[in-house]
Image (cartoon, rainbow, N blue to C red; front, side, top):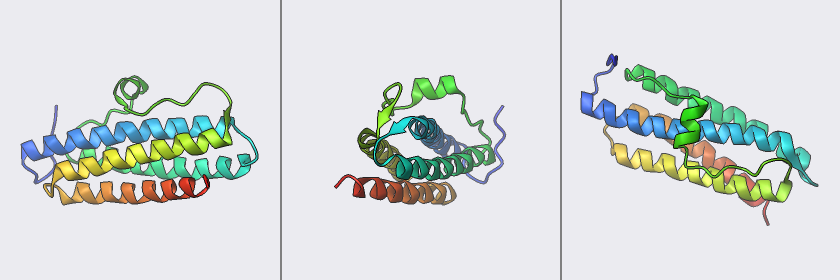
Length: 156
């Protein structure tokens, strides 16, 4: 049962929840893939990427938590089940096993860009209808794009 703990109109809250769940799904998938790469990266840039992936993981989990809590504040359940993420995420999966540092840089640049773009799309779709939610999503975009910049800078 949905209990609306917000002053938003029901249809606005529903629209907002759909966007929040979509971004949450992408962030949770990104966090899992970040740990997968963190554990399995090899190559001359291993240490740098190993540490940087931990920073990304921490940030992504923080943003996911804020988004899940916003869903709850709006009266909706947040779905973070692995089965839901596997079915609904649009992110490409990392290859199985060991992954080279060069491949991590390429794949994670793509992953970060995809999630940042999806989050920007959510902001655009909200179109000012829920500025509190947009503020949370803007913070996530800023952080994602900062990490993206750092990864792309290493691909020179």
